Image (cartoon, rainbow, N blue to C red; front, side, top):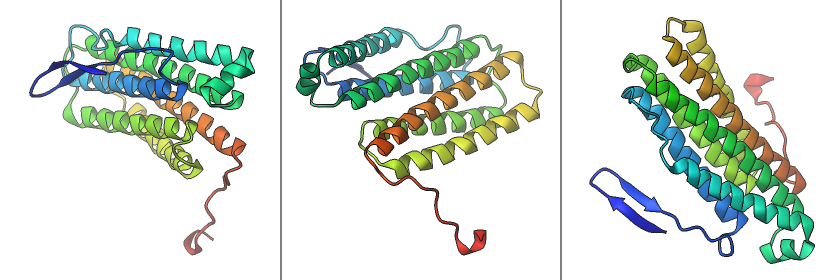
Amino acid sequence: MSVAAESETATTVRIMLDSGEVSVSQSLRQLAFTVRSIHCDAVEALATAPDASPIGSRDGHVDRLAAMIDRSVSRGMADLREVDALGTTRPALFESWTAMRELCRFREAAAEVGRAAASLDGPPAEPRLKTRRDVGRAVREVVADGVSVALGDAGANVARAALEGLRRIRDELDALDRAGADAAELRRASRALRRTADRGGDVTEIGLRRAVRRREPIRDREPGPANR
């Protein structure tokens, strides 16, 4: 990894990819970081209504990472010796592949947010902008937690908390829909934000399935005295 450009406000990092040196889990972490970065820029673009989508060349980086994961998983599914060389198991490889697919779908929905921002005549009113920023930030946290659980870096409790947060996100998006009166392009951005939330939930569900496979306890919280 090397710094390609740096200023007072931003640093551009170039990540060199070598499928012989980068593990599936490392590739998935890089993929999750990249798609969250794309999502952040797409949501922030709503504040500026740019002339073009802000996604830029990172689409190609996402495709390369996804292809690396796909190749490694395909080899592992075909040859157990390859699984041993990767230091993993076939179920874990399949979970990583499924998470990769959902992260790519997350990228596609984030790109739609960026395209909607580019089609706006001007930025939305501050309250509406703040709500979408808050939703976007919460969605990215769900994705980060979901990937951590899918890779075994965090447990089922983190996945459950992420899914609870996802319910709150959907409630906020429902409230935006009920409020109406938004421009068509802003409604389009909200629909795309909802799709990113759905993809984040799918990644988290993959993590929960991994937790089940590892026989982690997955139960709803016992009701407290106030809830009985």
